Length: 277
Image (cartoon, rainbow, N blue to C red; front, side, top):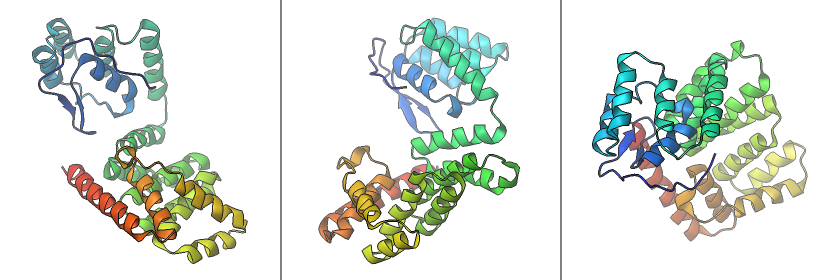
C-alpha cells in the first residue's frame, strides 16, 4: 500500500527507531504507516515500553500511551497493541483497519517457511541484505521440506538479489540460475544475465545467451533494459545501480562506470556497517 503521509499530529523532537530496519518515525501518522505496511517485520520486542514512553513524551498522546501500558500488563497479543495504535487517530479508517486485521490473520495461517520468506522479503526491501540472506539460507538449507518448487525458486531468486547487492557475484549467478530452473520465471533468468554482464564482458554475455538457445535479440533486450534503469541513484537499490554501471561498462563509458562503482562501493560500506550493528 502506498499513500502520501499527511501529518496533523505533533512532530517528535527525537524519532522512534525500529532497530531491525533502522527506520525512524517522527509522527503518529508515520508510526501508523510503518505498522500498517510492515506487519511481518514487527515483533513484540518492537512494540515495547520504550515505544509507549516515546508516544507519551514525544507525541504527547498520553491516553494512547496509558492504554498500551495497560495492555502490556494484561500480556495482550501483539495485534491488540497494533490495532490500538492504528485506531487512535484518523489516518486509517475502520475498513482499512479491518483489512489489516484480516491480513494479519492470513499471515498467521501461513506455513513456517512462508512466514520466513515474507520476513526476509521485508528485510530485502529495506536493503537489510545480510538479515534477509540469513533467513533465505535457512529455508534453502531445509529445501527438502518444501514441496512447492515455485516458492522455493522465488526464495532462490531473492537470495540472488541479496547476493548481487552484496557483490557476491558468483553466488548470485548460482542462485538466479537455480531459481529459474525451479520457477521458470524469466526475471530470474534475466537476473542471472545481469550478473554475468557485470562479472564479464560483452562476448561472454553473448556466449552465455547462445548456450541457452536464446535469440540475438535477447542480448539487445538485456542491454536495453539495463540502459533504461533510471539515473536517480539515491532511489535505487545497489543491484539497480549495478545494472546501470554494467551499461556504462559495455558501452566503454569508463568514466561514468567508475563514478557509479565508487557510489556503489561507498553504499556497500555504509550498509555493511549498519547491518553489522
